[in-house]
Image (cartoon, rainbow, N blue to C red; front, side, top):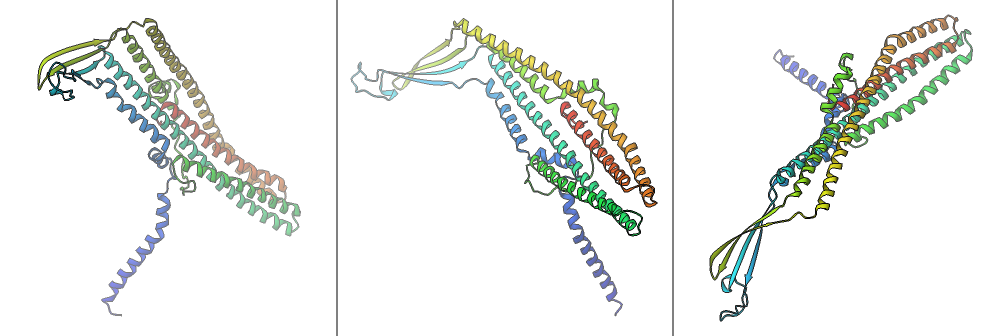
Length: 430
């Protein structure tokens, strides 16, 4: 081979190797691009794609567009009056053209509400727009909580499936040990049969877990407005739980009062009811119609007139009934706000207590139950291999490992769900 061909061949080999690496990495890149590996990717999709949240945002925009028209003057009206269209006083035939009859009167009328009514109507519309904004925030808080809960449940079922498959492999190893001891006459055949029965039961559990996996998959896709069978990445981690010092009830109660979307909506409802009551009280005073009226004779306008018209609020009993209604609606809005605040604070206390319990259970499982179960299993396995422990004890030790690890997984999931509920109450992430 000629020397000048060696660099060319090395370059070609390098290019082929790089191309092979790219093609081999393509499935991994495609898998990593799927949503589901982290909660943040799911929340971003839900924020952008959920139709229920989109509907609330459209309603919020619609309510904001009502503010300006609420405080604007009504459209004026134009009235045209043709007088003496029969032309009886002059020698002419009837006509409908303004320049060929006696007089034509034009009246431009502008309705003008009593002073202060327009401002109050605009303030009522602003409060109602804030209510729509609060309802949109409520929808997002509820949706994000459902996504966080569904993700935690998805994580639980995926890792339960992995744990169950691990235990199934462990039972396969125990079956080999029991079969070897049975072959050597050191254990009864019943040990082998019990190992096989245990594996069959675990496989049955796997079927149920796979069904739960499918349901959790569909639930997440539904929240993200994706097809039910659209692929999702396997969840690889849960969010870290903040330090216990951040779960002070008094501090979180203040944040709840300031940021909770439901309370914000109720406060906007109280403001709307207050402004509406003031607006109803303004009905004690008249509204006006102002008019400008030029009169045309022939082809010229030779006279001008001004007009003022007002309504007389004489229906006192009807007005007082409307005022009592407005006052009752305000009292109802204030009571609703107070009841909501009490309920939310009680839910916050319950959520903090439940989160603390879940954290303690997880700590017990992680630091005590799981290590103790593993030590018990190792001791039982060593005892069975030496004939000091029967197979039933070994099976029970295996079950204890599975139960301890499942308890740890469930405690982790429960803590995530409780955290999501607390964040829904606060209206923001911790």
